[in-house]
Length: 156
Ligand SMILES: CC(C)(COP(=O)(O)OP(=O)(O)OC[C@H]1O[C@@H](n2cnc3c(N)ncnc32)[C@H](O)[C@@H]1OP(=O)(O)O)[C@@H](O)C(=O)NCCC(=O)NCCS
Image (cartoon, rainbow, N blue to C red):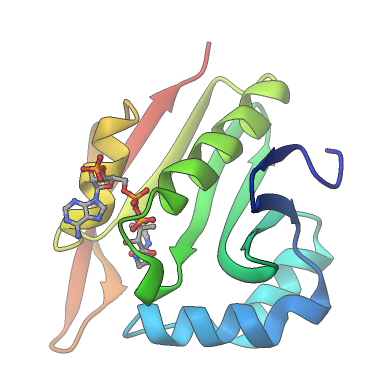
């Protein structure tokens, strides 16, 4: 992908770099009760996953990560800075990542989401994702584990 493949007014989406990780981690820790560690983000960068950051007003305010292998794409993370929720940034970044997956001729884009994550589930439903299954006890939770809903978007 080119460095800046989606730009509109003050929004730009570009590859994530190791230098972004302090900012990315601060967004991650604010957003999730069980955030990824720096090592997980580093590994994703090292193995060459499609890791993108969205900058608005010159600042990293969202990021998303795609794993593409064997004709399938998987959304590993999509996160927008808490105070900027509901301004269209998540939709914009997801639409961009869907086009990245499509450009790689993948058959589908799959992801896991917590059943309790109403905001994300509405976003994915509005982008055409369909429920294809449930992974029992996939996520850590305050008490025990929480299932994951598996979603898939056909790309061909
Ligand atoms: C899920 C997330 C990425 C959405 O990003 P966002 O920038 O706030 O979403 P957008 O403004 O682009 O909204 C897109 C659509 O998502 C849905 N949505 C977003 N926030 C919502 C909320 N609080 N309640 C209900 N629906 C919501 C709506 O359908 C919305 O469309 P609309 O505004 O036209 O009604 C964001 O809430 C987030 O980062 N959450 C924490 C991390 C996370 O849970 N990531 C998903 C992991 S699977």
